[in-house]
Length: 431
Figure 1 (cartoon, helix red, strand yellow):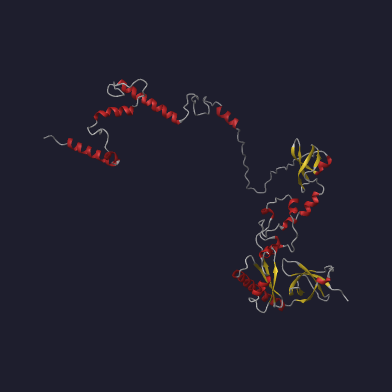
Figure 2 (cartoon, one colour):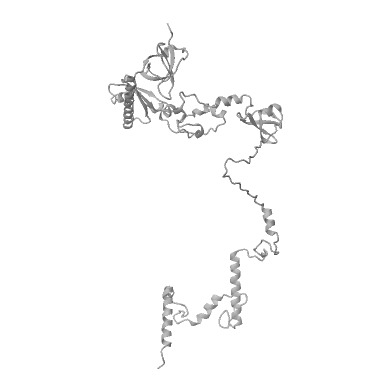
């Protein structure tokens, strides 16, 4: 009697591969759909592997019933439509009920259609009562046996899919990861990855699955290199290892005199510094495209050269400095305010000198200011006009409030009108 053959069956496109036993008389091929018995009832799955080794524990291996027919595939399509409607009803029930923190991920019918499995995501510390939930949800799905399966954060992220934490279009778990490996913080430390939570945490809130991709390569490269904080002998003396570079096969050593210095594994073993050769590539004068234009750019002169060219005498004996001779620092006023003050004092002195020459007294009529008192032209003007004050104390030379507040345009129009009236009066013929 021929022994059964063992095959690998997959129920989802990105799902775990399970081992099943099949009758040797069945002519199975990769990609065929078969009907198998599982702990969740009869299911349709796809054959992905053939000729597997005999497993040690045969008690967990289920048999293959038969190859799926066209009717089985059509019935599976109708079950998918029922699963979508069941998931919609589940999420509506969770929203209307008081089950906070419970999320409906998926709903799956067995091949006979009498068994429904609900996949939920919830925290164990939330106090979710599964028995009470089954009693209430059974009213939503009559004549159906309902089972609940808890889904972890990684399985939830895989089922939801979407953009990865690194920016990839589709997450690794939704593209090709069929099983989740155990990830530890040691893997991030071995690869010198930042331990910031945003750098090592995925969308699921757990350590990223990609930390295990290159972990074995780093561990293999570290075997020949000294560990961190170890004192090693280098061509420049002894020092302590502060950083290990596995992929470059080098370490960074902190020397007492020279500071941090990078040494390769070959330099540590031989005790001689390797000569650094700079590779230069010849520049080809041949260009594939004929539309290339070569532009020669002159080197910009340094500041000292520009200064020499500026001070260099020209043909007419002049220099490039067009600013002319600059005043000395001691004669140059320190600020604009100082220059304005000097001009005001000079103007005041000129006015006072002119009045003295004309025989006027700046302090008043025939009075000279006492020695040491500074003359003020505005005050002198007020003193001279003070003698014309009226009995009520007003000054006839000073404009009234009404005139000062009158718009400038009105005063100008009045002056023009008065000039016209005076001109017309003078132009009349005599008697």
